Image 1 (cartoon, rainbow, N blue to C red):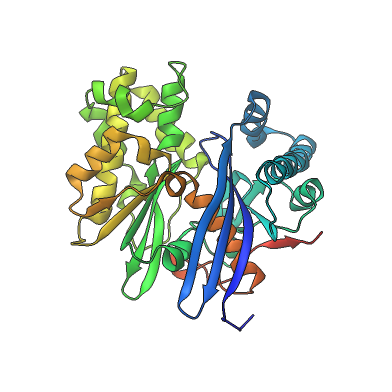
Image 2: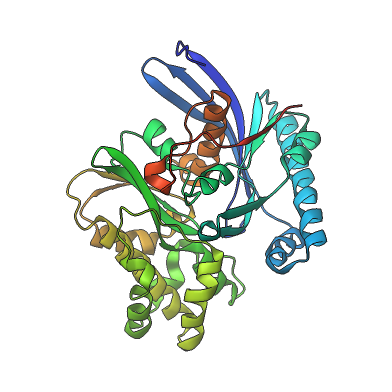
Length: 359
């Protein structure tokens, strides 16, 4: 479409993060006109995964081919049913569904990335068009396939100079020398939640366990010294579960640190890496979203180290910004407009990714 007169899109965005806390479902409204984009999150909720699905998704990394493919479709049908229930409960009339899927493998260095949740199965389950598989085209073009959120930061959240998401991983997006750049900074909830679960808790509520702990300087130095953190900030780089298993888990096992001290050390590590990322920046506003925005202790440590105005937005934006932006990526795909930036991913060219399943 080239006509930018006022147009409205009603889209359901689905996001499942690496922390496996559940499926984010957001019904979003986007309006385009000659002045750009406006958006609203009309209805949103997180559907916690039943233990059966949580364990099944966790096991797929080592599953055989048949079990993997069966789960790919079963998970798609499961998502379709959740969407169908969401539509009925909220009386929604949506144009289509835009699904991130759940990442099992992310290996751009080997030129592939895999998100389960078959688009055909979702479409059959909710009886609506579905767009999915947003990362593969960029990876095929030599990119990292991540992060994808920066195009949404640029077009929907342009009033903030820096957009930081504290989810399974911390990632940041901002303008640099006339182009948008973005990258993963370090692991956050994918590691912290696993540590909290050792005490039978799904996460460290408000960072209270971390607050009572003390930093292990030995472990902190080891974490900060990992080679990834020496890569140039303007070079495309992204993290995945495989990197955590290879680099973080052995360090946590090597040092026998009390759980609260471990959480405190991890918070300090995240805060220092965020500060290092922004150390050359002066002035401007930093938007913080994602589950980590509720970790008061972590946010306090970031405030102490980062000399920017820090903004914590309303609850819906904190919790559902990624689902919102994946809904928006679907809108851009439907309009055949760029939804993945080579300046972010390192691909050979900008692209418009996403497989469309009509119904």
